[in-house]
Length: 236
Image (tube, rainbow, N blue to C red; front, side):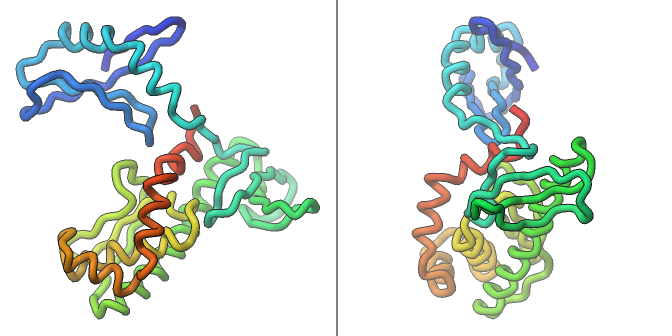
């Protein structure tokens, strides 16, 4: 890890050495707001630092263009199954997290308990709801394809929305619960189809389309809005 300075900002840069790299490259990870500098096999720390410093303005500009993080905090508005919900902390209420309609008709995500636990409770609730929806959608997709689903796992995957193992385990990002339901349904169809075709061939996409005719609409939504989902729950 090194740091570069631009104006009044100090930016951490993670270093990674890649045996196949032929030159120094910089990449901004939108999901984590991290900066990664890849070094070629014989690259040196001094050269890496010089390269990063020469590109400090580029790094700062790209980071500034990323969507503003939205922590899970009282008053914040987050998407839940594609609809905006305002987080409302109710410290003296019983329960943990639930939804209700406010007096103005806005959807609320209500959180009981002490203030320091609000973010964790919201995260746990969203992950639980994601697991529920994805399990149902995955079972339905697997049934339509006539394949056996072994298990569904829900994690915070930053590089992909879902994956399928050769053993029949489907893994998803919990952040799909933030997207509209048709997007979650598409991801379930996509990963279940890998139980038939472990590739992205034409045969694979025919399987996806067979059980999810509207898949192109979902793919377009993810291309346009998917990166934005990673800002929710971030601390900025």
